[in-house]
Image 1 (cartoon, rainbow, N blue to C red):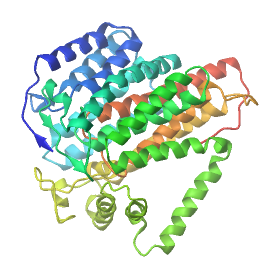
Image 2: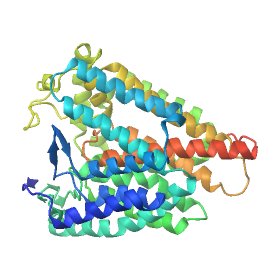
Image 3: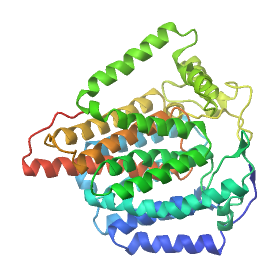
Image 4: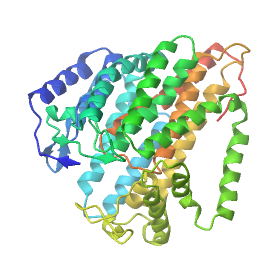
Length: 444
């Protein structure tokens, strides 16, 4: 891939100004759509340095979004729930540990924490009703139609149409003779993550009555994005999404499923000649999806080898330069394609534990909401399908994090989905509790 330096031109600036106006002044649902439209139709290739912080278009949007929800009191810190506090603990601890340990990269690490807080709490404020998120998914499907059209143009011509925004990217990235589309993202796998992570939600729409047409449209578009990225990671993540919905009939017996998965991993670990973390590489060879699976497996082996160096409060990324025979040209360090390990190298084992605890608590929150939905012999309720789709979506991210760490505007996608899990599960529990419904036997 060839990059040509370019600043934001009039087109890109006009889109940014329009979206800022929408996020600040439009109704709440349109503000959500405006934030995510910035992910699709603006890029990170143009930045403005202010006091050592790189301000790219999404940072302007997340700042005005946060100002909006605070000024309008759409979100207040006096009503934080347990998941909100755990989220803050994760990023506060990770940032403080990094700042105490390292004298380099401090501005970047603070920027990561600020992005996380601004995005997450902005979306927590904007998703005030379950219908807010359902409306967003319907509108988002419409927004994806021109986006996928641009990706098809990129696939056919090898030229990135987002270069007209000042992104400065010309695509010359092929795999097995096919273009690996990038769109407005910085890597094909991150583009594919967009499609793979929303796919389970649209499958849930398609299985219901209210939004079946929107579900089919959204599912086709999301699958197209994952395929056009031509990357093994998103394809595997999308497959996880499909597998998650295949488990729908087992939703009342998920403990058996979890024990089965754990038992399978233990069995594989006992019979494999290589460590169990080489399983992705072996599966990649068998099904031929590619995607650098050996790199991911070897990365975990090197992290295990140097566990004593980073477990307490992390270690400098420059110390990973001997993990591979090759390194990132710009930084002379290993390419850390693992989100869990990224937290570990930044702040140690406790940061990974806090991240895993956040994920576990998200599933517990969804499970509590699902258990409150009354059992029915008829077709499942729309809310039940949405809650299950959110759980499957979370599984997609977890598996995807074993193959890549999010380093461009993909974090906005993750935080709107995380905020949706927290908000919708809480709203469901409050609504169903007020109705006095009888719990159903559903769990994760």
